[in-house]
Image (cartoon, one colour):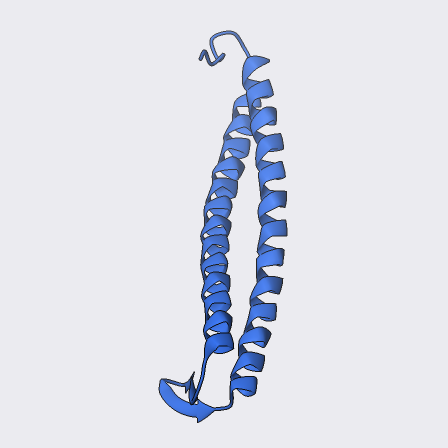
Amino acid sequence: MAKEQIEKLSSDYQALQEQLQSLALQKAQFTEQMDELNDALEELKNAKGKVYSAIGGVMVETTKDDATKSVKERQESTEMRLTIINKQYDEAVKKEKALREQIEGMIKGGAPGNAVTQ
């Protein structure tokens, strides 16, 4: 019985590790996107003359105000996504820690010969 429980918990732990990796990748992608948007805002702030925006792979002329507004909207959206990802990541880390402790407790408290030495 305990062996099956440990195997099930180990499987759950592995799935949680994969989820953490996926969330970490998403976090990195959204963080990079935020950096790019911050750079774009800085460039727009210093821009003089014509401003262009990419729409579906085509560059079109736009006003500095419209371009700034568009970048700020994308920045807000990305920031919201990043906040959600961070919360999901933090929750997954807590679950991972609790599950690891549960597995370690079961292994240490298991039948003789099943103890794991470090």
